[in-house]
Image (cartoon, rainbow, N blue to C red; front, side, top):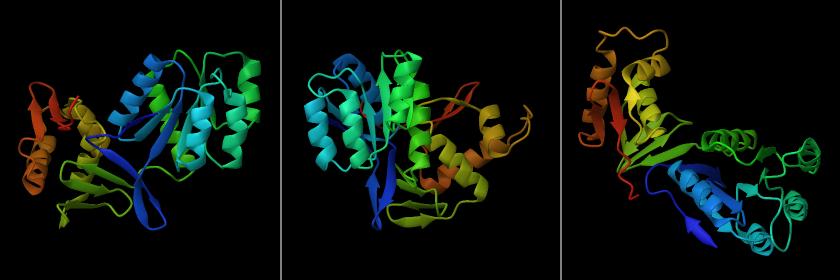
Length: 241
């Protein structure tokens, strides 16, 4: 078993009044694939645990308090179909990740109760989108994001820094959320404008730049939000690669 916890943005869900990090079990016998999945999920802010075989996966499912299971079918020991039946008794959401891509396999997996079925090879961006979709379906999607010394509550639209609330305008909050969800990615000004303000970006507009400056000042993030020449801005996660 290997555990991975995000060092930058973290995704949480509320359980019995307490915020807990969203936890995903990766049941996959091929270590390079498992490592790639784990790395990208951790970068996206999820806590991840890897099980290399079916027996270990079953043990973890029994006491791990997971929010989602990514399940390969051809696992040593206990196969994915058998684990699917066990996951159903535990009411655990499951996404099959498998090389078995025939229609019959997909139908079998979905009829058994899997929430989604993704065939290898797959794009990581598609996996992340499907993970988010299943979590939303079970109301386990993020409600709180923690970035550096700032906590963003997406439900109440509140922001705190070291426990003290920061008053942001609606557009500043949306801009911060966009940056937080795309850490270490250079975002074009037009992308930021269209995402936060809607409509078409006018190249000479200073709206994005002015709001970024206000945001940096309010959060004390002079070094965390960096300007990218002829592009726009990037939020540095500060995590160790």
